[in-house]
Length: 385
Image (cartoon, rainbow, N blue to C red):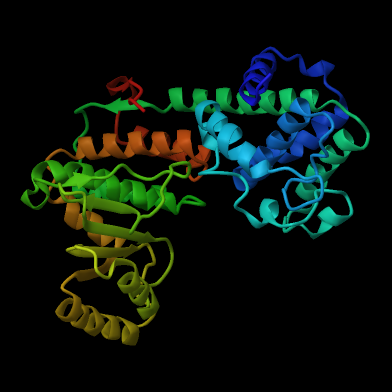
């Protein structure tokens, strides 16, 4: 039996699992990991990797997750080749970008044993104990790795089903109903940006504007707006949050977005290092910070700095606030409904493929939309993913 066989068979059993038949100890420990999965999904993937290894090779001590341990094995290779691709296909919202073994919590040379594991860099003590206890139960107390794996998949499947219902309740094609103007759209976005953990939302808003700009502004007539990177995409190198390329596949315009971070000279210095010797025409750095700059003196310094950069390097760095930029961009868009559609669909896509967009972001946007569109004018039509 291969790793793929183990994963698929466990998922199939998980979908029809009767939870009342699962041991309480399994439920209690796994539920801790699932409850914190939004911020610690690498641990769930690492544990899944360990369970699959134990099922395939019962004699392997799965706490020895590195080849440089005596009698250890490469958990990272197993995760990269099998677990991460499986999660991307079946649980994309909880999949890691490349592998779970890039965080300090999983990659360090620390055996995942109860005593040594205390040194793992996992801030949440409850989470650390549950992770180590599961491995101890399997390796030392001979509990079934299969039962743990099936229950983990059951919880992930359960979460996915719940999230799917949220999507079905929010995927709405905005029709030409209410009158929209720039002030209304900006008010809607401001309210949405004010929700907690909203750093991803301004990125989606700016990207949604660019989806319309590339259709109508001559500057972008022969340019390519790259797909918006999500948390699980294989992004080996990028220059910013949003990128526009020439037809010859060279970067042309880049937008980087900071959330509640004031702009200082060091951010500009970092940009110079990042894009030096690249054919980039303009690099926008936009922030949601109310004052944009750290201070008036810093603003004056940066204004002089970007002028000297343009003279010396030939590219232009533009510093601005998110709201001011959105107001400016929206002037070039004829159909504000289309922008709202773009933003809604991008919000849903990001929710599906990463944990940066939270369920509450979907719910709040749904409420905001309902204030400007009557319910009979909103028709459910899922966007293509």
